[in-house]
Length: 303
Ligand code: NAP
Image (cartoon, rainbow, N blue to C red):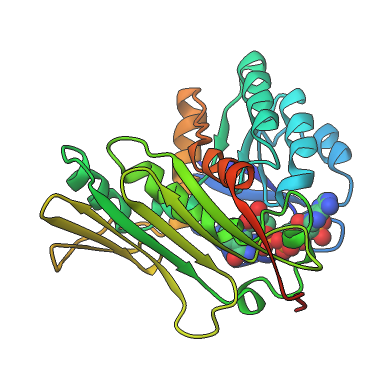
């Protein structure tokens, strides 16, 4: 049976992915939206989150599509009102605030899901299974895209808490932390900050275990979201943001659901089983890169 769900923050990702995924889902019905400006045709819309929580006692689950900085406040109010909560990635602006939400959700007896959409990319599960009994001996990640094309005029990504190039880069880290059979940690990093911005526009990261990562937001050429992991003589390549898995030059079959339908399916399972799924491993690496990374000032940026 379909459960009513409310989407909060009707911006780019809500319109591109969440609304169609919910519409196609057998688990959920979009019963309300909360937005300062946006609406979804045919769906009751609210501009006041607390009013929606008070009026719509039929809605037990809230999906938050806001940027990370305002998200905690909404999540805390939803949990306090006894609602299950689904968080877009990155799950918050800080690690501690997400841990706080986890504690609150456990105390209130509701489900909290820190979604990582790239982990649901179709090739990721096959890579994880293949690597599960191996020792990863090295690898490289290239996450190089054009910020003007994918985040047009989204000023928040360059504000404190917006994470800059780690906003897409955390998707690579979500895959890495999912498929590696043993954890790695950051040994060094160089972060390029535009002189007029608070967050990095490019980063070079060196992990333990001969693993490197290049993030670049000024790539106007071929858009690249790929990683190669070596395990002895075996080579696993995850291409197209994890949607294709090539093992030793042979393409392997992927999972069937697209990323956002898979997230909503998992949320339905969590709610049904009374569980939470909170994993901060990708965000720990971002935090470590910001803590340890060498800051390099580069040319100012404008959209
Ligand atoms: P966005 O379009 O810039 O913002 C989403 C919506 O959040 C806005 O339309 C606005 O909704 C609301 N919002 C923004 N600032 C707010 C504030 N200070 N207080 C309250 N509401 C605020 O961003 P987005 O691209 O959808 O990204 C949102 C999240 O999804 C981010 O964490 C991002 O990493 C993640 N994500 C984005 C993409 C992508 O391709 N863009 C892909 C995957 C995941 P209202 O005007 O409706 O109130």
